[in-house]
Image (cartoon, rainbow, N blue to C red; front, side, top):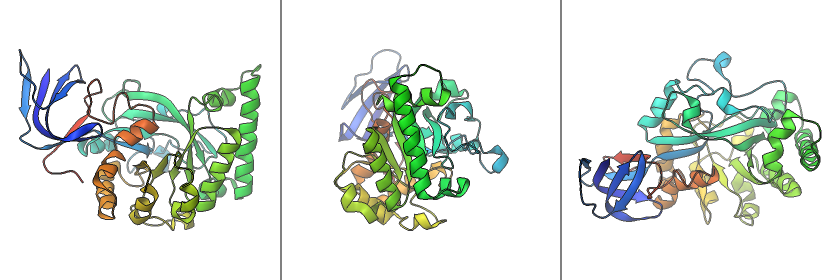
Length: 349
């Protein structure tokens, strides 16, 4: 057992102030203003240092696109088939990649990682911890969402127009719907989509440009499937429309770095702040587009452009935990949750 004493806690569900935190068997046993010490307990006095939940990024390719090793070592895009829902991230994540250590050192304890955006349907996204050597022991959910991509990446890879991409996705979902209603003959692709069609999992839709964002909404509403909009780079171009649909989770980013293609013209933290007004959002790095250890820097930049501090903190803690369906275990400092805790010498971000 361990007690962290006199830490200034910043967390969803906890009123800001000095607290003691009792940890037992890697779980948060108790959070209180004062915890009496009984028996053999390791005590660490934080002397007023800041304490947050472990940070969470809801959209990365951690361990799938290995650090500095080139195209041959990139395992995040299964090329050659625009529809590959049976592909599983956990079959290719390498926990020995140095980026895991860098992420942990920056306070990121959990993240989403999964397929890239070359394919229209790219495969199964996983929620994992950043600590461990065996991916099966690091996984919180091996398949919490199905990756889908619109826009320039599949357009370039397969020589399609946006009309063709949308049509291919629509016809595939129609086939999946038929299969879910009458699945007599086994089909690996269709089986992988059953949790989507049953509403148990959601589509994770790569969409940058305003028209792609609207197309994603149109198709998902047509089939009644759950979804998130990931990147939303030019979301301010359709901001009034998005504001009529506040229930759609927006995963915003990467907002740092150059604009490498036309559909990134809206890239920037000013737009991220506008998209976050009046709704909960997640800030993402799309690591390695932004190396995952710079997630706290992204939060700080969002705050500098006007995002309220508490909203920014929750965008990398409880909000991504909820999006991935793991909020019972991570995302806040609350009794019963995993002891994923970060101690900061100075105020974070």
